[in-house]
Length: 297
Image (cartoon, rainbow, N blue to C red; front, top):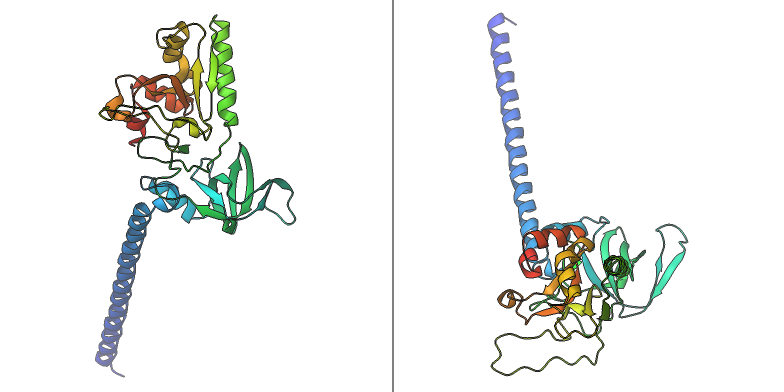
């Protein structure tokens, strides 16, 4: 074979090689675009359908946590037991039972791995088969940043019988002890609402409202109503003033503050405080924000 023919064959082979590379790049690019569009679609889909577990305003991050089958350190949503079931201390073969749950019980949900869900009831972390759980309805038991929301547009089911949260109880006891050391004496009227709770009656032309059984912060198990002896004006009492200035240091915020009726949608109540944790409470206090403003409720 002469040299000219060799060069011709070489050029043809190089051309074919370049064509194959170009085709591979074209296919790879198309696949990348397709995958990008698919991911964008699912991100949008999850964002707009997050209400399946935590309400319409649940963050996309919380929805993805559940979708990706991962356990988290913060509550993602609340779920209801579809049937009686044990909750286990760990996930392994023949695990030890931590406690038993009944059909209709509500639990805090911390994510899923394989067929197991990480849950909590009355402050006790445990694990349960995921198929034993039922998602909450839209705008019921909405969770943001690991906290159960309450308010004008958020509902708590009538059969949600939450006990007073152990973490909140500990913070409350520490705060009351701090008050005692400074010479203040305060009492707790209630930290939960009974089913026979009677909503305060209002004139039909009243501008605002009082929370009812379905949206009252005392239904969360994370709020408390205080009392003082022989003092009709709680706000003007020494204890009331102390709480306004110091409660955030222990994780509590005034739930229905005066002058914020247009924001909360409710008439003020100087006695009711909600636990949100020290970091959030301090941020809210320093920026003079209500729960509605801070969480964009």
